[in-house]
Image 1 (cartoon, rainbow, N blue to C red):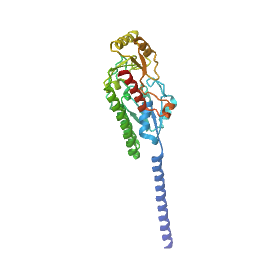
Image 2: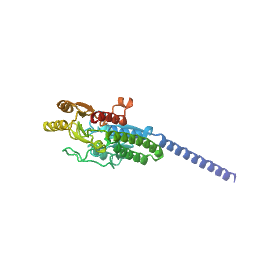
Image 3: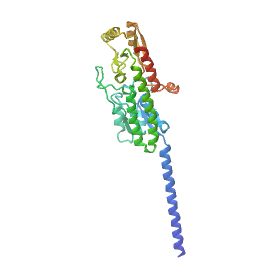
Image 4: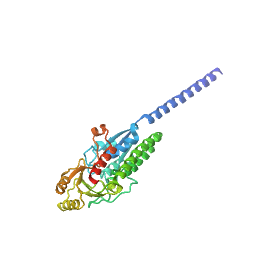
Length: 306
């Protein structure tokens, strides 16, 4: 009889031990979920920016395309393709911006990687240029569009990391408020513009122009590497002379050659409009970001159009 009691006591102790171990294992799993950083790959700077603003320290974010490299034509290496398979999320602009993105998406099929095309839900506009692109992919140059794109990133983060939903929502709220203020400041300033036409180095500011009642005349087409014809340059020179346009815009990382030629012909000057394709690590360390770049753009526009 005593042996039976002893067996029962030993069984009870064994069961309690198993339950305690199970609880400890589950606790470690929960800690892993809460503390382990997500690995997120983004294509170029605006995608890196919105992902970072929303996820903050919850994610380790990689910007695949370095500053100064053309996002249209960049190609991922085999090493990058392999690393992506071990990530949690791949974020890209879409709308034809990253023509190579389908290669990555095909490569990721069957892997547990969340794919986010941020331009989903943006009202796309037709390209002005005569090329194979149906739509202008430079959606993010409108702060209102970037807010939509950021919301797509928010939704994706919540989907794969539900435990941090409120954290992500609060960060998105802060970002959205900054983008709203930027939008209102540009909108208010644009009402004072006497000139409504901007001559840009390539077709990158269509969404910005549409948002703020401007007309974009691009020197080049969708790609900054396209060469304008002499007839196109002459046409733009005539338009500038007829409309008293004194400033021609160039972009960071784009050869200013043709902007300078037109400015010389009209006796004008060249100013910078930055499409925020890329910021260097040094610029980010100095405190520059999408918001500061767009305010710099506003300063250039006020000088040129007032």
